[in-house]
Image 1 (tube, helix red, strand yellow):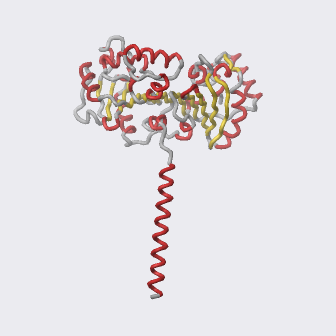
Image 2 (spheres, one colour):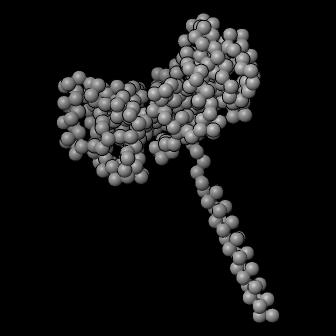
Image 3 (cartoon, one colour):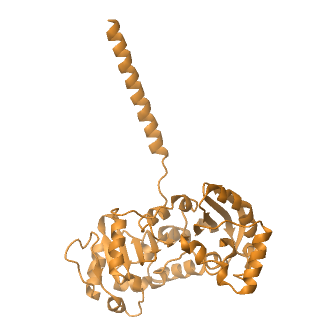
Length: 351
């Protein structure tokens, strides 16, 4: 009897432990953060990607209160989005021509992302529109239907002539196309070989881009421009400015105590004119060390851009989380955040 009671207690203890573990697992699962749309899109790009341009068209439609982005309403939406730099889209200005010739409207899509690496570029659009209708349309333009997997990643080769078949269209990043019907994805590239590689990443057969810590800092932006690896320091470097601007920048950086080199740089525009500028570093302590100097630079004049950052955004806060530093603010009226912060020699992105 004693043996039976002991074994019963052991089984009771095991049962309790199982229940506790199940409860803990349930809590962890419930609290595990869902990826943002920016993270979701970036994960479809190759691990070697050095530039990411993202546009959340669903969020922009909500921001601009547009329910039907076609016709005059679509034209007005594009004009507002481009004028306010709410989008970094390469397809926006051609949306009417794409709807006419390719059978899909990027303005009506969920989101659009462009990824560029040393090897090539790919553009991905997630949409609820009929991909079968798109395939019918591009067949008429001269795209060559693949022998199999027409809706499961096989490359439809078109070339410049197929794009030019739509009068006025010059979106050569759509010269070759692939479709993932189950995911609602259209993938395009000017290189059929690079597109075939990009499809493997989008299908999960190859590792994608992992920048979750940096991208998480942006939340759910309307648009984001991200530079990674060599591009983070190389493309925005003050070395691209004239000598007087470089000298002024060196002086400003010395005055704030210097800054650490970047491994990643992000500019994201959120709903309601929210702005996030994100910096990625090799080490956690670099993010902490750069908090004060980059906050000071965020209130300075940029000799490369010939503007003062307070003209672009009102500084709100700076937060270091691991190896990522995020500066947040509110855009000023009529500001051009992508032009001022993600293009040309930029003091704030100094390395």
